[in-house]
Length: 163
Image (cartoon, rainbow, N blue to C red; front, top):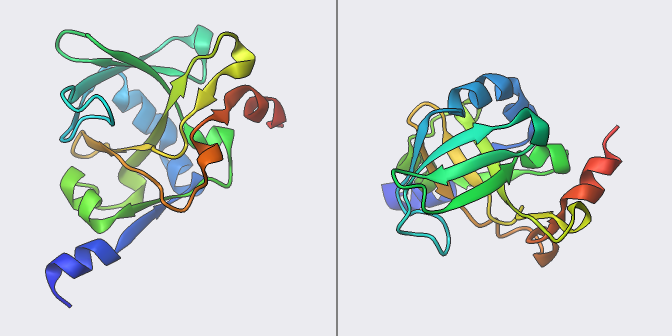
């Protein structure tokens, strides 16, 4: 098998167990770090550098702001908190692009759309952001094995279901 075919066929599988192994450590590292998205985000391709911050008053959400000018900002959340069975498969090509060598070096976040009230706030589980904490590079990927309901996953309902 040639190298290009191998890259596309091999994937890292990330789930809540790999995420939580070093989650708090990765989260602490993420805050104040600059993260580079080679291709930007879907519909925001020209914005490639972001910083992250958090506010204890709005846990479990994080703020993601473009750098250097802060022209765009997003709210994001850790998806395994919303759906413990959530799984992310990262192609070898994407892993190589962002310098992700091990599932334990990954941090997975999803963008949040704030609704008119907290009950209508949703998360985009269909297109998570995969961050390599080792390289500080990231990519937004599209999960092909999830249905359209994952695009607007209700955050409130998921948080209420948590024990």
